Structures are given as C-alpha cells and as structure tokens.
Image (cartoon, rainbow, N blue to C red; front, side, top):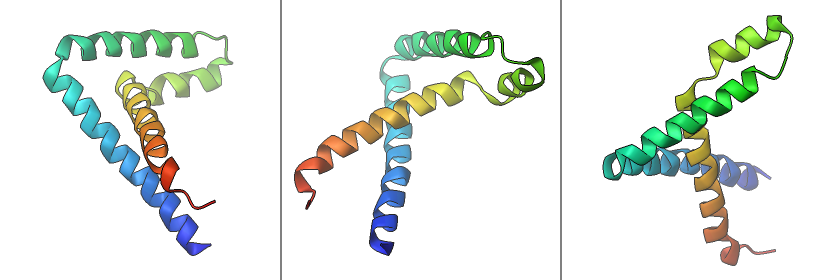
Length: 93
C-alpha cells in the first residue's frame, strides 16, 4: 500500500514538472501560441465566474483563479495523460 501511495504521489509530482517544462517549451518556441492559450484561459475564467454563483462565493473564485493557473493546470493534465499512456504497457495488472 505504501508503494502504491509513493508511486501515485511521484506521478503527480513528475506530471507537474513535465507540465512546467512543456509550458516553458511552448513559451520559448511559440510565444504567439502561448498568448493565444492565455486568451483561452481568460475566456474560461470569465465563463467560470459568470455562471451566476452567489457573489459571496464568486468573489473568491475571481480572487483565487488566475489565467496562469488554468494554463498550468492544462499542461499538467496533458502531462498526466502523456505519462499514463507511456506507463500503460508496463503496468502489471
């Protein structure tokens, strides 16, 4: 059980590192693509905050959710999917 916890935690940590590396790679090689993706994240934030949530909760969403965080989450999820596909042939189930 401890080994399973260690593997899942290290996978999350590794996916964050790979996601950050992919974000930096896109920023270096194609800044206009990153700018476009930031625009999409900005639009997604406005969709999330414009859903009619009670203002006492919506203000916290507006304060705590940033475009950079959404973009980093996207790259991290992409890295998790990539790592899962990469590790799938080696699973011993």
